[in-house]
Length: 482
Image (tube, rainbow, N blue to C red):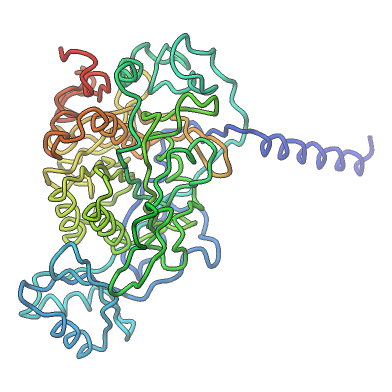
């Protein structure tokens, strides 16, 4: 074979490999313990984190002006706030209605955010001021190959990939340990969820057209007016809410939020793909990260503020699933999560993927010591704490499956992913199951139920406060607590 023909054959072979990868319905991320889609906060003026291997696509997420989050003291009027901002040549971009005095301010001089925050913090009318931090997600790495299906499970829903979902039913597939799962089959004997329960996924949005999610998506009721924010204006929230200014549609263009949503509530027993913890539920997309996986503290706050407003309007949203975080503490974010709790909304948050003790190095928002926050660590299929997972004898509360988790992805596809990001929606999903049978539980009662019904594991002694893995059957009352 001459050199020219040899080269031609190599090109053709490469093209076939690419086509085979693209044809795969199930894609797996590289089987490493490296965290995927764990996010970190950086100052607006800071360069991308070193963990980001590739630059964001041009125009992917707009560069934002330097911003600060300022909470004014009680009694400071809106007129006075406007006067103070104008005196500093700044603009009040948004007032967070759920938290009195909390305001997002644009600096029109484009100065460093930290300096602007210091100036506001020194004013007698201000309780606190802080920079609006950027939040970043690590890029996904995929092998792009179709995985071989596991043998069909003897029991459970008719979804063809259910046998690959070891977190729901672990029969020892893939080298796992039998029964190292959340006891989903036992829970489903009592309840498969309810469309009367709304679980919000606060992330990169959700692909609400995915065939395995479309039947379980929340949509604004026909008799409810579009969302109106005094500063942001009228927003068509027919399919959920987006705080990303250039993408008011909560459609996911990144994948992370869609993956989390599928764990909570991919439609069960529909003979398509997989099943979620809830076969029936309403998933509310909350988008604060764009296509490249970037967002900000302010955008997360606006999304939570939206949930509180819709809860007051009569939407039965009781759980927020938050699979992201950073080491940077935000008083403003803490305040709005507290307000969510006061409105009976549980906030389930990822413990983080830094392999560290979160009691010593807190990870936020999971590290906020609030009565409605539930921090979640990740387990592998052998009931061992995943090597990447954060832990904390006091500050991390429960664990759930979080390694090699199959769920929904963009374009009607499915992928495996690993991280406390995946463990979090398992717990949020179980919370939804509990509310389907006991809708009047308070947020404190719901949180306590999830903590007090875990399966105790030796591997979690001294690692999480409950010492155990969430158990859906016990949580819904289908199995007695040992």
